[in-house]
Image 1 (cartoon, rainbow, N blue to C red):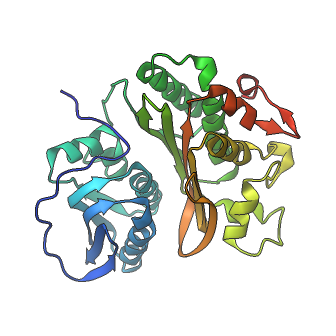
Image 2: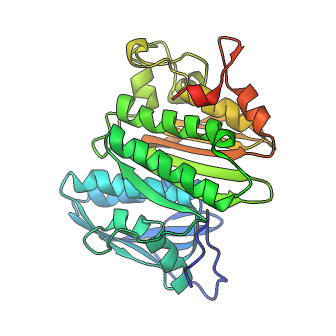
Image 3: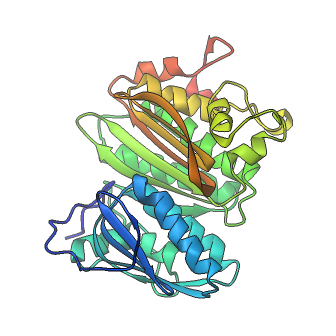
Length: 333
């Protein structure tokens, strides 16, 4: 029987390892480094991402050319932060830094790392690509050009159609448009040497919710936007500007509506939307509304996490308004 593949896998914790030399501690996760070995103990959430990146940066700055990511004591892992670590590992391999990964000791969580393709992207020499072919989730996919991007988007849409039988492709047009736009941004704007990673991390049949994640290791949104908006005061201000209609670094290569439209779809459907890039963080949720903040630790690249509620497909189409005119998502490829 194949392991369940979901946004996160919770394992009933026994006793976590007693660990020392702590660098970063959060409520749910302890991250620490012992020379070239980075340990993750507890639940790895998006709130722990920047601490983990800081610890990885310390190891690289210390001159280590081979780094071990030890998830042995990890009891749960969310897709967003793990995928972001995958992208950074892929980028560092281009600078002659190699990685070894220790999978979680619990077999179900270890299987999640393999099925989701995380293990492969973290340490490809050690772990072959995922062979998971279930209809409940879509593993993380790497794309570097328009052909691979189109294949990834089609695979995502077909996976969702298989998971939620009472949907047809027209109802998924807004999602398909959004994923296509965000992944296209990676190819057109990010200057990411590794391309990008995209993953659909959870389906909910009853509430019809889908979350997708796109991450790259490029120059980041603030740097690209400052080419056409030099007056932006901070990276957080750049992210707030990025979700406005028609904002882009270069109108000749895009209308700048990908982030705007995706944010509108998520907010109108009472889903959620999170954007991390540079020193900026932007997050929307139904409970807390829109929040924008500045972070001390930068994210080198861009991470987009979007959750869409499909309970009312017509509402999604109404969210896609450009220049005050309602757009038909199926015609916006």
